[in-house]
Image 1 (cartoon, rainbow, N blue to C red):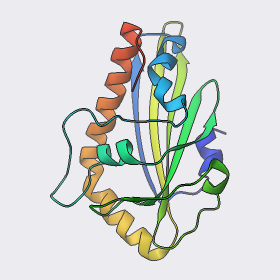
Image 2 (cartoon, rainbow, N blue to C red):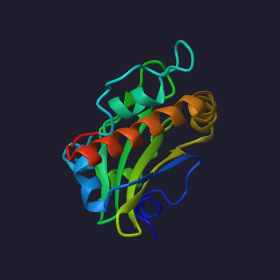
Image 3 (cartoon, helix red, strand yellow):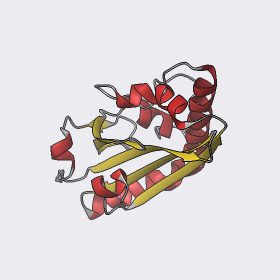
Amino acid sequence: MSLIDQCVPRSDLVTREHRMLSVPPQRVWPALRPATETPPRVLDGAGPGFRPRAGIAGFDELLATAKWVRLGLSDAEVVLGAAGRFWTPFMDWQHLTAAEFATFSRPRRAVIAVAFSVLPYGEEQTLLSFESRVRATDVIAFRWADWYWQSIQPSARLVVRDLLRNVERLALTGTSGV
């Protein structure tokens, strides 16, 4: 069972992307260092915004502004989580600990977990995967989160693919930072 399966066994909305890298896993982890630090970071907000429409925060903004907490770290995966209301133009992120993440239930909110997995593929390649899972705390939050998720899904995939390409570039050059 993967760490994200342990942290978010039930989810309402999911996004997954994969990228094959021509470097071994031990060269990928330094590129993911910001995700393993305290406080963890997924995206530093660099690059163009991908707002699908005016008034809707893009997935890049969600990744850059969330109050991430590390939920788990293993030799093959790092999982981060955040909670709040992120489908409005002014995101409302909650401060929480990893222990509070599993039981977070504040009305009209949702939790989001993101995972980077780094798996060897042969001797000199790595399968780098990104997965995000959202679990709404109630029906109203689900309806809003689902509407938001469907609105941003095409641009979210672009953001994640760009993020994975950036990790690959950093791994190839031997530098760190997402």
